[in-house]
Image (cartoon, rainbow, N blue to C red; front, side, top):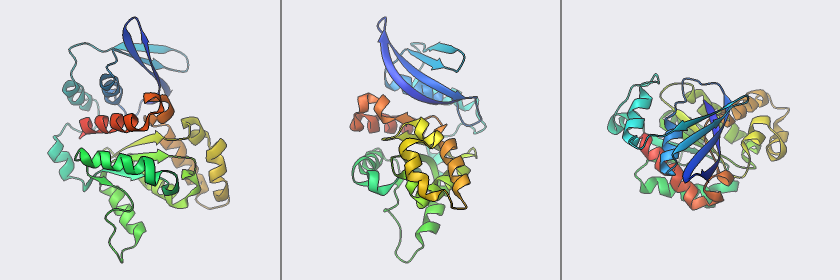
Length: 254
């Protein structure tokens, strides 16, 4: 299912993790991400809100993270494999997609170094590009050689044709079973990216007449529909805790 975390709340001494469900299940999404998010926050219940109904899922006390990880793979087209076998197939564990002027010197740098500290090999566009090489070719190759994609949506992300081309390639790779993309909504809301409204529409406006604009809009909507993280509704907007949460969840998938 495609969903975004809405909030955490506590009732009857139990923490509840609440998600807004936006579309029907597809082959890429399992309950793994939801369970791992709940466990990392010590939540005992998951509340899924659909358009016409809602469902509560109780997490058994005996359910371990390792069990969730293994069982979830039984329901996907990708077989369960060890950390070493997964990593041997890819040059990078994570590829970071972001608008440099918005987040490079703050959120992205902090996220990158936290990933590196956890031995999660991460590609960031100013790392590892050799002199004399075409950056576009290097980026395309790096996207193809990465297992996970973290797409950091910020106010000016859609203003960059470079970011939008990058996003199109990421979403194409995401359609295969070998790659998984996760959006982060840094200072924009998922609905703004999905509907191309407010700040996202303003940023995208200069591309309206370009030939690729239709494909770029489609890629933005598709990415916004994926399960991901929204800063303002997670960890009370605390960036350091937010990054730690994401890195912790990614670590469990490697």
